[in-house]
Length: 288
Length: 288
Image (cartoon, rainbow over all chains, first blue to last red; front, side):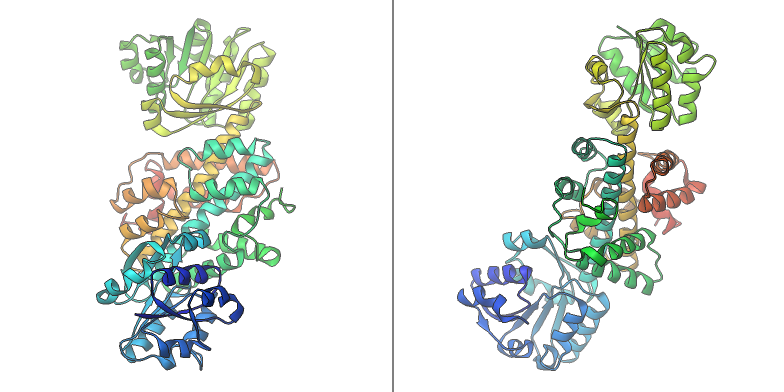
């Protein structure tokens, strides 16, 4: 089976690499061609546009930055959808909007093709190690046929429902993370103001009913003033904006998520390219 | 060594039981005497007031409901402090205010006694199994002498600093929990509105960067509409109020914790005696 892969960033490069390792023929396109160089050396085949990729393959995977980028590679003049053929499968793994995922699926269906939304979690480390989690929305009947491909770079590939459901699940994940990040940040701000030994607080609090992944992983980095991105502030702002827009469309109020969005938006003014743990800088402007 | 134990609720009863098991002579007082019956059958000795307990023992432990109750058992006419002797040790384990802990320590010191604040985490299960975590504030030099006693019912006993530091650490813990509880609640509210299968969302989200104790432990209970208290809404409201009062006194702004407090205060109007996972009822008034 011939695969296309559009979007060779940190995530995409690692994922496409796993597909090559699994023996697939992989046709690639990226806005900046140089980023695909090592993949091309490993046997990937360059194409000059998403449309060209689509023409060459059976199944197209994509992971780009923002919903606008997804719209561009799908609906643009040289995009995927103008070139799609009956029977083709399209899988977008960008964390994007459920609404856009449904729109793509509807257009694909009209052209007798199948589109899945399949955002991932697990970060750059998960992509490199092939241990991502993939949250899939789309036609259930066709899910089993795409699962083995996605399993090339994932430890878990789970079906959540019709088009948009993968994106909805990723949104739910980010709402949860907003809670652990704001909680962790305010806990550290409080503990420092109260003159406690922060390492001890992390260890004790992290060992009980307040335990969470953000504390274990970002807590120590904050104490070392390490604000390098595991996950970019600017991407988290995007994700939380999607959460709030979708919630509003469903008539749902999410006050804690709204507050987290406001804080991260404020943070993004000066720290958009740092990691989400930089939220503490709203309290510690000098990073401790 | 003769010990006193004041406050025989769910927590205190289990903790005092472990002290009896460890071979200590334990003198007890509780507002409602009947709650001490099984301890008395096991060899505990009843006293008619906190003052009477204090007169009989070397070291007094206490765990009651609210800061007002701590003030009453310490400063009341028949309280601990009017009866305290030089050389005695006083340990309050109620989750109470750092300010009150400092006040007690100062009065104790003036009477040549020593007071520790030592709130616990781990809940009724931790108390029963003797696996609590104890966060201690007070005189460091005397900490080692009280540690073995507290270890009778704890898996971890850690010193955090001068009087009030144990309470400050517990406050930090509750600030973190406020984040995981609001995040979990809004995640489930969103996922249900988006028509996702909630069991699958809990499993997938709980396996990655959004993982946390609240999700693992309360998520499934919420899906079963089980709102029985592991930890009471009314007690969490108290704890978050302490957090915000202390933060304000330190000139610290905690917007996410403030929001969590507002939500839990609203919830407490009708659900004060349910567990903290009942927060979802602000979204699902019928409990799913």
